[in-house]
Amino acid sequence: MHKEIHLIAFNVPYPANYGGVIDVFYKLKALSQNGFKVHLHAFKYGRAEAEELENLAYKVYYYKRNQSILAHFSKFPYIVKSREVKMLLENLEKDSFPIIFEGIHTTAYLNNPLLNNRLKLVRAHNVEHHYYENLAKSETVFWKKIFFKIESRKLKKYELILKNASAILSISSKDQEYFQNRYGNSHLLPPFHGNENVESKLGSGDYAIFHGNLSVAENYEMAEWIIENIVAKSQRQFVIAGSNPIKSLVGKARKYENLKLISNPSHAEMSKLIQEAHINLLFTNQATGIKLKLINSLYNARFCLCNSKMLEGTSVSKSVDVCELNKPSDVTLSVENLFENSFKQADLDKRKAEIDKLFKTENSVLVLQSLLHKK
Image 1 (cartoon, helix red, strand yellow):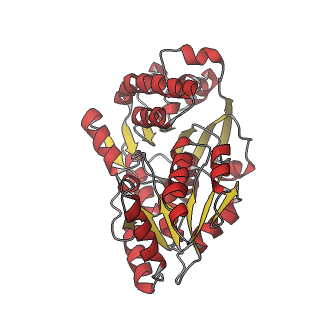
Image 2 (image 1 turned 60 degrees about the horizontal axis):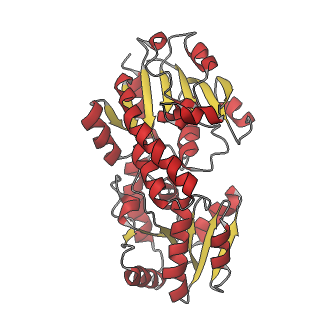
Image 3 (image 1 turned 180 degrees about the vertical axis):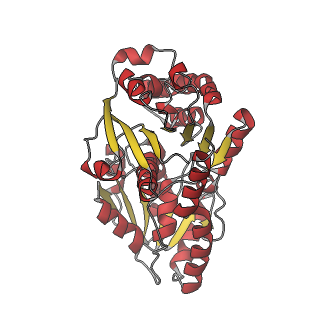
């Protein structure tokens, strides 16, 4: 088995505070702890170089992402073209170590002849053209909607590059089936997330929480839906917490005394909010990939109330409650019913049994090791 590998990250994976980089950071950490010398390659935009990465990786390379307007006019998707940096290719061809490409974003050199005969694994965080198509549907700003539509079309054509991958590491069972049907080389690799044990507290909390990046349409639209359909019709206390909430969301939240909007909480504060809540509201209108906040909540929260799109592509069924957002009255009733119950030892035992089986980091490491062993 190769114990020295290249890991190409689409962004600087620290701090590990949003979906994709959480998977990258804790994958790096798990590989390092299992004796791998990881050559980490990271694209810099909006994030600084991080000493924490130097402590985990054998070597760290940083590249400036090309965010010029010209990158938008390529036939290749912008998320790929903007990460086409010759220095990356030069560093990769210095040896024959396996390469893990994090996301289709980093695959500009996947089919380059200089990397022939290399073991090349692509981590698929989503079916990206589906993800961008859904972003276009949710977006209300005209120029952003157009960008997402164009990017989705480019990604659909570009996805054929995955034929050059030795294996595709799919993050959910739904995505695994999609890639397997098209390319025949897909393997399910559940996300790396940093949680070791289920830490859900027994008893009751005083509020229900919705959390996420509140500058992203998928999240702020859902937060506004919760305000209009649940908060406005309930006497219970609610918290909406996350980074960079848009102005319209801030304005709507101010109208309700039973709602507290917490902007840009620290990692420690967010962890406490999730753990102390009575209910974590885990709703989404995008059934793509797998939501890291679902896994984080399952390891740390009491009751988790989800819609089916949040669970799609996972096997989670026994340790959550499910409701559908097209019936707001049913959602409100589910919230009220959960507030009438405390989180008991039986609930905790059921959670532990299911979640350890599905998302234990050690199991994901074994899958990755077996694939790296093939060459």
